[in-house]
Length: 193
Length: 193
Image (cartoon, rainbow over all chains, first blue to last red; front, side, top):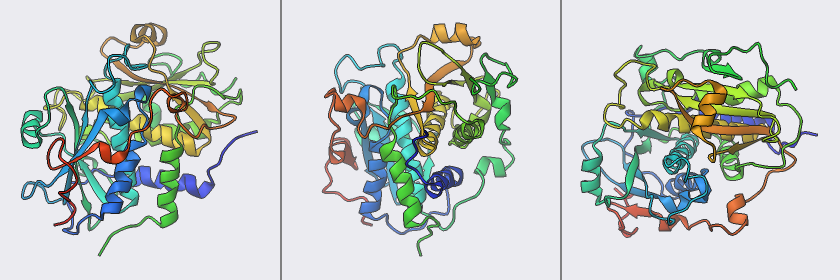
């Protein structure tokens, strides 16, 4: 017996969020983000997976305005503090980067949450971490992982900007899936027992 | 005028997925995952954000069975290939790790998609990358980022296993949010213009 407590409609709602999520850099309006909406988005990030359940202690959300540089009303710097839960974290001893992975999952949660709230999110990766540290007074041992700009938008694009501009096409899904071994095709179907 | 093309119900569906997503390590049933369901989950990963729109070329999904070691019918190794789009990727020149971040966002998309499909997902981080490379024939330049086990489950836990077992409590959200500057409290409200 299959266990599924999601309806067809609920499932479609998630896929709608996933497919319509865009990296937003323009079309921001000046309308402020409602505090409760912002907290819902942050809470979504707070419920992301975290290696060794470390993430709630490990990521710090820091918000401030960056007037004139970006047109979005809220900028959010999501950071990772490797020193927060002591020396041992389950799962992190073998792969040290997994703490940062948890932060990325939190970002993706917030991104999708924001999309359903009508809030555009852009992940700005062309920024100097040193400038960020200085401006936001981030301690040396804390890693700024993501710098996000959030705001209401006049519209959401249907395609990624870099796809629209011809930068890269979206690859076909079956071209990036291997079965059983690297470069091995789908003649072997692992779902068939 | 606010632009929002998501209904209250659609928004609640996403939050339901986010809050009920669990790292699943047990309760897997032997029932195989339908091929179409698996493809929907992989496609959700394919539509994650990617720095410089690089991710579709950069992550390879590789699935195989690991019978006897894990009880889940599908294991999925999600990898990152830094050599796939040539030397320059927008945004990646300043922060080399961002390609891996994109893969993590893809994992989170798949995790949420799986949850709405009634499929449990566990991110197994206690695994040797070298063993993975050897077993799956992954080339040296490709980075295994996530190793996931997927399967139908008899039930989804309501709390993270490590919270239930008393490993760590979930911190309050306002304890991990700073405003304007590190360690600075919420007396400054960045949402008020």
